[in-house]
Length: 164
Image 1 (cartoon, rainbow, N blue to C red):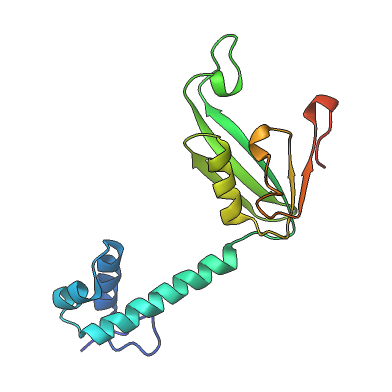
Image 2: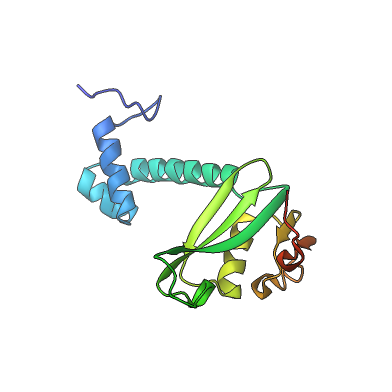
């Protein structure tokens, strides 16, 4: 007797078979390989894989990109700074780039460097083109309007300007 599958209301396979299928999908096996290992029909495997991928795409689209007004900034985290050195020159620090939706969600990503291409890759992946972007005057944010972002507002920390 097969146990009811809590992941699908009209499941034709057991929960343990479904978990095995999901595990094999995660290690990047093809549908034919998964069918051979699990003993399931290739068409059944394809149907479940399509449903899983559609669900993943739905969740990704509902969570991203952020919308409205966002603030972007990078920061360095790590051990105490070396004497006389600040910011990027301060030794072994972890670079974290973040996108904050006003009154809402936050997205952070650890990046290898804070170069312009790296930062713009994160922004393009998480921020819709019709957003208003607020940033400081760091040169890595230059060119956002050229990428298609309609509004890019800058603040100047040297003039004691800060977002509220």
